[in-house]
Length: 567
Image 1 (cartoon, one colour):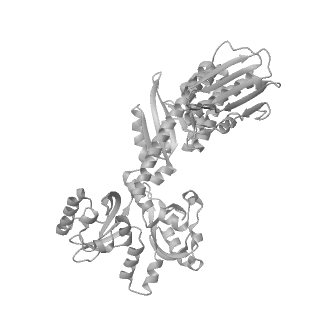
Image 2 (cartoon, one colour):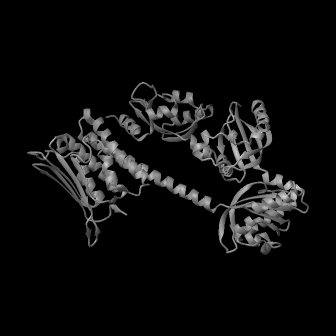
Image 3 (cartoon, helix red, strand yellow):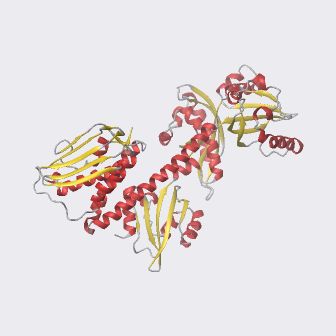
């Protein structure tokens, strides 16, 4: 079978978008079903791809294809979707040829952004205490940050069906609808105050400030982006006292973030409860003390002091009004990663500065965890592709051409069944009975009739489970074709036990066929024999025996250690 055909077959089986192109577009090319779904078209060559791309990306692709070297690009389609293409090139009989995979990464781009600047904006928006949102040209929400999702109780997976207008207080519908519809029609900013029902059923008054968003290429109106500010507390406070002092005090008291105010000499003049929780100092301890000495790590103090002096002397501010990440110092002397924004209080003379500080230790830990998970996913993907490649080669070597597709497809399905169980268990192993039932679904008579399973609950490790699943698939397939399961009088007893020994538990497993007559051993050993004997022996560190008795095949497995077993 041609490499491209195997590549296409594996791609479809694994759910990958695969394609092969030639410069003429009329020989040995293909575009898999998954690739057609991702492209939303049949893409049979570079010209067809370029017709689908955002104009800004056409030149990048042309240059990459012309280089005739391996490349991987993130590209935007004209329909607004994002794709990632990985392509290798070769020359066949003097004609350029490209083989590649394509994946839809629209969700990842929307969540993470394409450029470093977009990544920073998305991260800031998602984690900002402010409630940020984006709507499309029809007023439908396409992004709610974590603060706004929490307010409305919206799960990220349910965003496409969420109707924000249903949360509006009945008495405020017209008050909100008129300016909103006018701004949408005129593509202009708008600002409105209205009451919305929170997730707990309580109505809160929010001020919405929004601006139109336009496509950077053709200037088309894309919808509104905005900020929702819960002003309920402020409105209530204004009924009692002046807005400026009371509103600031309320924010200082309820904010989970540290909010501190310092004078031009860097001495604390305010320190909110959030700051007490973050830094471990009490308000009374820090008032009048130097900020550098209390919350700035030693190795950053000189730079901080130089920046303050430069600002007071020249008005040049490199960090004011920005949200930065840097280390901060707790009362116990430990450092932690923090997100910091510093602003000068308007019209303050001498200058007063307020800093908003958030402990981002948990977020950093989550990012590192995600990085490790992506590394593990990459490793497992390479492993499964290596297994598929080996199965394809061995199947082709030991199978007639006309039956290759059937045998190869069956083995891939068996491998996929084991893989599904491992994914469900987070690759922590598989229960023996679950593994066997998943691999024996193709036995028409079903388990419990002529195929009897018997054994205790035992959990098999991930790597061993993949191999045992392939072995059980081979045993059952061969039995249906040549053995007991293929004859009405035939029977298979599949048993296992886990006896305890001085060096730990062992696994003993037997596949015993009966009810046949004059069974003889095959004259040649194929890939199936390699799977049920050699691969199982290696995966389980076991002794594996195959015996062809007159009444049927007997296959046995006895492990020499508990390496393949898991708790």
